[in-house]
Image (tube, rainbow, N blue to C red):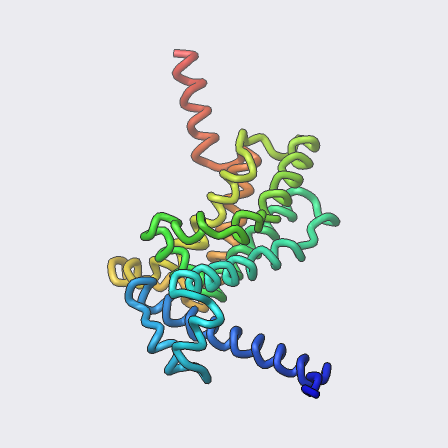
Amino acid sequence: MPSVPSPAGSARRQRDAARTRADILDVATAEFARLGYTGARIDEIAARTRTTKRMIYYYFGSKERLFTEVLERAYAVIREQEQRLDVGHLDPVSAIRRLAELTFDHHEAHPDFIRLVSIENIHEAEHIRASAALAELSSPAIEVIGRILDEGRAQGVFTADVDAVDLHALISSFCFFRVANRHTFGALFGRDLTAEDRREEYRTMLGDMVIAYLTGKGAGRDAGRTAGQDAGRG
């Protein structure tokens, strides 16, 4: 009579499989971020893990699917942080600053995420478009920003005519550029955008720019309105 696998043995195999998958994804993340989708090799990923090329294909099916799961996991990290963001007790100005700081901190702490997104843009988001998981992975940040904007306008604090998606793009662009372009920017202008001694300055700058835009207190916008008023009077 064939023996029945014990529950303990089955649980151990599941843990081992989960650990192997996580190990493969860790190494694949580093390889794809370093060499891009085209340059990364499954043989090299296998050599750097406690598994084989055949086992990688067993777990993921293909290089394309492996890269897609790397992207899915990378995006899940920032989405989880956005989900945990608690700004309900803050006024709209403080809340939007806190959300901007979250994006700033995440992008700085996850340079591989920045490289992976850059690589996926080279491929015109073909892997993201094909991912059901990413299609369903809504951005909590958009929902949070929308609520903050509504509250800020209701209180008469925010005056800018901007929606949550465009404001998210504004915040992300500064954070993304700072990490993605640090080397070229440093070579051209002799300034390291990720230097530790300037970190708080840039973090504060981001919040100040966003709040100035939302409240209409930016010098450029005030100057533009004044010039327009003067021209009208003339």
